Amino acid sequence: MFLAFLDELRAAGIPASLKEHLLLLEALDREVIDETPEAFYYLARATYVKDEGLLDRFDQVFARVFRGVVGNSGVQGADIPEDWLKAVAEKFLSPEEMARIESLGSWDEIMATLKQRLEEQQGRHQGGNKWVGTGGTSPYGNSGYNPEGVRIGGESRHKRAIKVWDQREFRNLDNTRELGTRNIKVALRRLRRFAREGAADELDIDGTIAGTAKQGWLDVRMRPERHNAVKLLLFLDVGGSMDPFIKLCEELFSAATSEFKNLEFFYFHNCLYEGVWKDNRRRFAERTPTWDVLHKYGHDYKVVLVGDAAMSPYEISHPGGSVEHMNEEAGAVWLKRLATTYPATVWLNPTPEEHWGYSQSTQMIRQLVNDRMYPLTLGGLDAAMRELVRKN
Image (cartoon, rainbow, N blue to C red; front, top):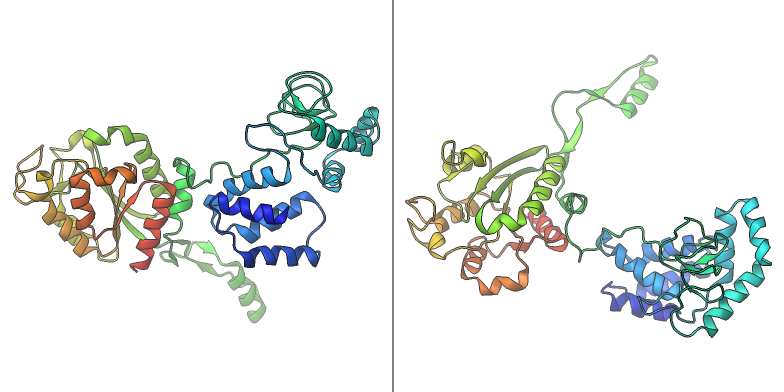
């Protein structure tokens, strides 16, 4: 079973090595955990999973291998660990509930019947009061009514079962899923450098204890609040082909605002030119010269540009190529200046990466930012943050 578990993890894209597998076996041999399914689950997860973006996939593999659930194809004849079920029941059920289970017979009889039915049953079963299936009143299965039963996957209508076999705790942390504000925050946290700056307005508990012990009287110590000292410049493409990505950009902006104290943002359209703005309603009336941005914010700022890079190539390569105004210098000139001024510069593209090769403008911008263009996915955002960290 454990070798099958290792194979399933690898098939799911989780880089589980033989060394980690042997480490897990050694831990089990030395009895470093309690003999409960929860303890084994957390031990295996800590051993094999090094990226929280893979937690959901791990949960799915764990369910298939150890809980007898195979996707949507039904229930297979799995070897259900009786002591695991019993340990879970004793942990989560009250004495009264355990007593009510006896109305179905002894615990051993219930488990033996479940195993027998899993072995005898062929295919999926709907309704009824005997087989493992959905609906009905059988003690085994899901979506039916028997509060003293064993639920196999699915959702419980009555929120009662001896064991929920299909719970997944990290459903929104799969790095193949769409981004959300919480997932974006998780990825942005790779770009952190903590410092204590400003007024001393936070109680220093350790310093107060040490000072009081040394002086012999209450010696209250204060210190500046600890915060993320990374400085970030965020440039957001708006309008036109970016309209389908408004919600995604809003989530990114919200997450970045909460994660970075030193954050400045500006808007642009398609390509960076001689002016940017902060209010789209007054984009033509109140612009900030790009030169002022390059001179105001120091070289230690990290720069993130967000855009689909979809435009006419002339908007990048030629003066006057902008679709909105007469730009005296080509967009490529301004992008080069930005990348030169700020070595830590990346471009996040919400368009699927497999489509980039069909867009000439995307290839041009990718070259101008020194090939540091990343897809606006959880994996791409994580890679972009790692790149910015390396550019310290």
